Amino acid sequence: MGSQEIYHAYFSQKQKELRNFIHDQSNAINGILGIPKNNSYKPHTNIYLTTDGNEVEVTEVCKDPNTYNKKAFTDFVYLGQVTKWLRVKY
Image 1 (cartoon, rainbow, N blue to C red):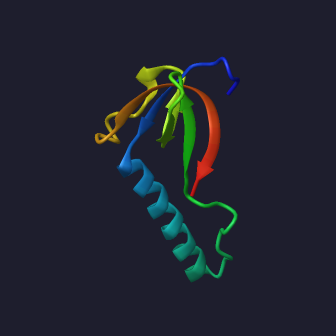
Image 2 (cartoon, rainbow, N blue to C red):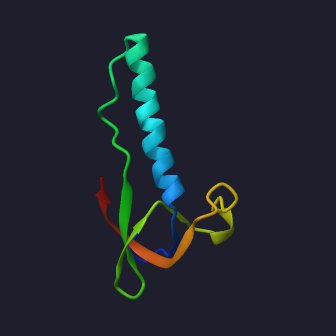
Image 3 (tube, rainbow, N blue to C red):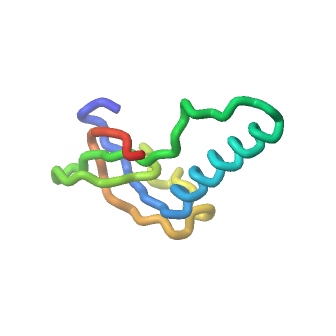
């Protein structure tokens, strides 16, 4: 994401928990099958900078606000427009 591009930011606790659940289940299945656990990926959210200079924790950003999956993540909160990715939050 370039510093001048505008994206729409969302946060969903359900989406965050789903990522953690999928990661945990994947590692559990790998353990049963004798496959090494995937420790290279850690579920996370991201911190972005809003157009008014605030930091927000997001689970997803979209160029077009109509593309966010509002049906699957009904608890979503629209956080506004963001301009810059800052860091990962584990």
